[in-house]
Amino acid sequence: AVMIGVPLNAPAFHPFNPLLALRVSSLPVQAAQKWKLVDALFAAVWVRGMHITNSTVVEQVANKAGLDGTALVAQASQSECKAQLRMQTDQAIADGVFGVPTMAVDDELFWGYDDFAFLQSFLDGADPVDAMNWSNAAGSLRSSATRGKTS
Image (cartoon, rainbow, N blue to C red; front, side, top):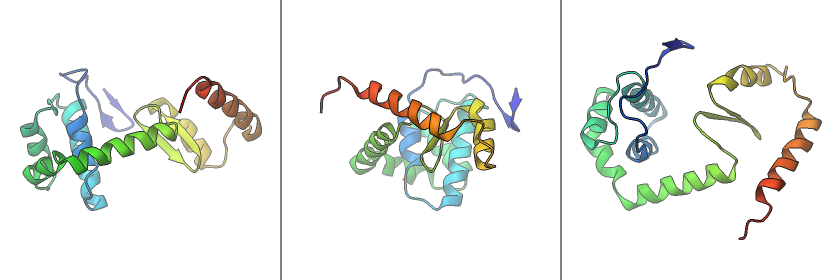
């Protein structure tokens, strides 16, 4: 199937552990290279059915994207990289991120492929949701979600 110009197939391995791919894609590389890497990892799983929990596969995908896959996988295995991903994950949870993809614009979060139309409306200044009513509703949801949690 092709949606929004992106081919999409059911992954051959699902569910799969995305930690290695997440660590590799969170490494500090130039933005253009990062986009190539993320696109290549996405296509590896969701188009070509590759098993990205395998470090050799991730190396090959990174190499094909024009990066040094061996170096990236080695760097992604270091404790500093693992800690960085944990910190980013904790921050995403604190920010209210629910799943992938989540798009953030200012304080607004848009989650999932089906939210792209709402994101576009928001960016165009034509959000159909009354901001004040949504703010009140969202505040109620947030406070009920945190009720009963301990620090």
